[in-house]
Length: 499
Length: 96
Image (cartoon, rainbow over all chains, first blue to last red; front, side):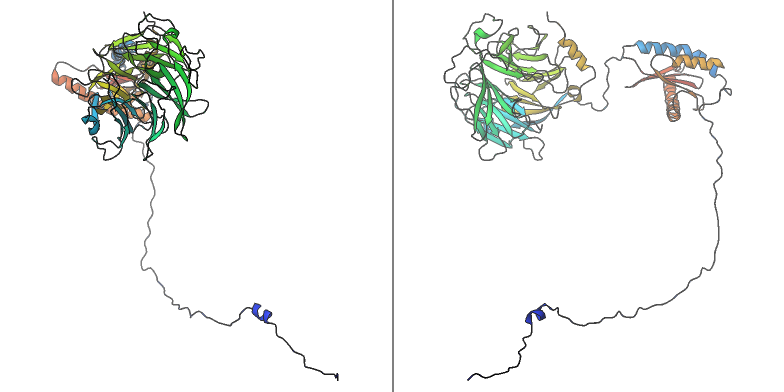
């Protein structure tokens, strides 16, 4: 059954080892033979030469001649001339002949010249007036708002906000770069001090709007509705205020309903949040002057002080001029139902009132106590914050003065826009009371309603007119460059005591 | 002569004087208180200017002659006294 069997062994070759062995091959190469050749050269003729410097003879005698070899006649000459020269030296050191005399060889141009006349034909056809102009923070874009200066009642006509970029090639003065449609007339405009695309505006209906001009779809970023908290009367001034605590900016708006409101922007929700409210009531104004009229004090102009972040100045319809403080805590004597923020009475000090509405106030950027104000009485008053009476009153025109502004580069210069269509530029350093320069933009019968100096390019100024045009004017160096003693002259003016 | 030095020192000691240069008939500066290059510049330029000013005055009136020239610049006042080919240039800073 079972038997022994022997079988051959089986060898299985390793496949794995073969796979891992590298492939080997043998090759050889050799460079071709290098070719060589030899050549020789030899110069045929030679020559040699050399050079050397020679010591220089000193030909010119030095200017400081030695004492002894003196030209004849020198002593006599000097003796003759000495008295004359000494007399002139003394007289010169005492002379005041050239005091304040300055020559400018660079420019001989006239004081003001017009660069552009910007128009928006659609607004001009409907007879809209330019009510406010403002320069952007970069200094190259001018923005203007249209509306009506002479409206008594409510108007429902729509108007525009237009902007032109002056540094663009192909600037077409008859076509604005950007036109924003606004449902009612625009009464105030202010460009953001840091972000060139933001623009705050106040409307005739009492609304405050912020537009973002970089958005193409809908430029409105935030809009206060007509609620119990906001203004019900035209907003005559808006300004961007820096809010120290949060580091961004808020909008301060002043309306003729007697309120000054501080809004912060809530751009996610597209609305304003009321941060602080100030209400002016006749009884709470210090140093009350007996004037007739309603108890609310309609605010027509507002100015922020660049030196003191707590102070702001307010001018009213009745001619009152008040200094106010943001940090005042006195509650205002108005009913505060339906309001989220209790209104406060901020007025601290009252200056001598004018005889008509105060259209414009501006604080001097060069002196902490000075400001200029102007209204319908045709006078521009230079006030000190410390005194009740104005330091200087200059007659600007025979009709209304709509706006005054200090020059951003020359401490003694300010410009005023008048109802006769002229902008008068005054230089307090000159002894005469007549204006240093006059800008006439529109024809007769049109008023210059607003003006703005350009802080970035100080020789430019924009003027808005009731014929619907915005003129960009160039000021010569006389009006835009500071001369040496202006600051001390301004200091002298500020330290005067008014009679 | 010591006189020359005395006179020049008195002139230089005046209020506001920045420098003085004395130039002879050949246009070569013989006394100066300024540095070399400035002195040479003043000497050459003022020699030309005084020649032109003198001929202007004498053209207008042959009996008249130039005695003194003052140039007021933004920075200082330059006074040139001239006689018989000598020039005395004094530069003064007006005190305000």
